[in-house]
Length: 200
Image (tube, rainbow, N blue to C red; front, side, top):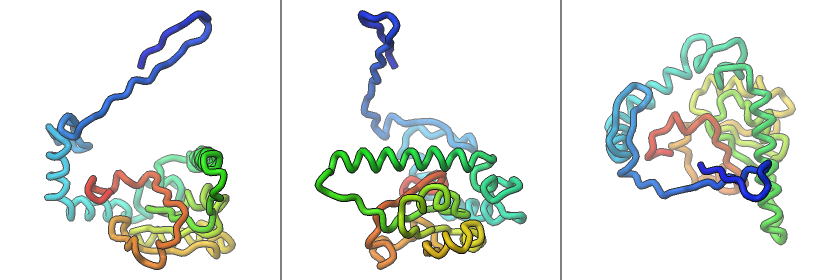
């Protein structure tokens, strides 16, 4: 990032320099310390170890005591700390900016706010703090049956009545089913790290 000052020394003008990154130039280590010379090498490793990868993720969320990151609340188990409410405020602000930008670009087209999917919903934190504040109905998609069941209690009776609950892994969700044919928004947060690149 370059910063330059012109005419008014009190104002900094920031220029963001971007470049196209090709998969062959991406290299690095995963969280276990395995080094990959290319993105293709990582993808091959993920494909070979796909079943083990998903079994480990399943075990992580099904641990005794609720699984996930632990903590004294369901929200802490989802994200690892007590910042769920602040995260919800930021998420709602992001969604509102997206709605405002979309509506100003498409003045002739009214945005729909009927149905949203909370993909990788966990206990329903995003549904509670963000999606139900803007959408009529939310479909919570969660792979772990225990978290899916707990989400109904976490949301409370009134909020849960505006939701449908699907126990399914995201990569196995049928995109052509009646449940997903009329979706206005799909929200993925704190989720993609649990998928292989091919499934994401």
